[in-house]
Length: 246
Image 1 (tube, rainbow, N blue to C red):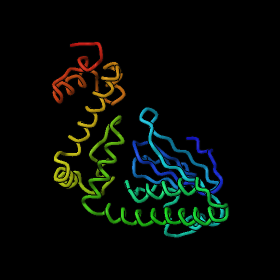
Image 2: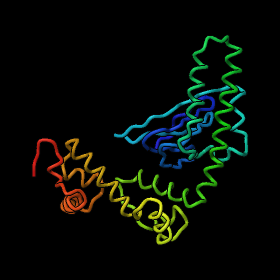
Image 3: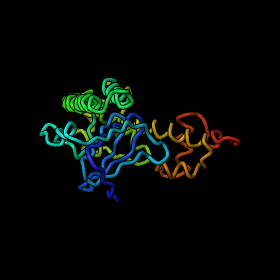
Image 4: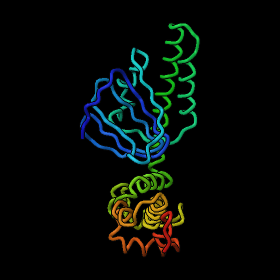
């Protein structure tokens, strides 16, 4: 994986839709999605990208100087080399909007530097608070369900085994399934299949051939995929492809 991109100063990305991946300076790859913050340290090789077809929406901040450098030195920001799951937070989005407005204001340069420095520190401080809150949440049952949902949503083009979910949560699959079903109304497996079927229907409606859809979503065979789609939706794959019937 190429991690040759290097930036000056501290940069910060906040993903607000869809999913993709990031790689840090150590070559570690992470799956990232909506509600993830990507702090990018000065002079550190890195790479990140949305899923090639879905794209994503991101807020992006680049800054240098003394004001934004404190997070890189704070022990509280010990996860700077990893994506930070902070969730979708309206106050954090408001911080980005305030920064944009301040950057385009008519204030003189010295005033603008002070204002922007304060806003940047407030934004980064909010990330710290959200991160610690998420750490506590992820230890609760609701946090476990949210983590599994994000995991399943980002991997509908692959296979997932029960042990993958157990490794993710530290729970037996039986216990995890009980917690998940209580919250979502179906087991993790049923939810995963449902997501795959919905993704398949979207691809078929866009004109993607049945065989290509089956391969892309990692079904055992086009025949198995066709049977599963029919059993779940009542529609055959060809009936969903524009201009075809059957």
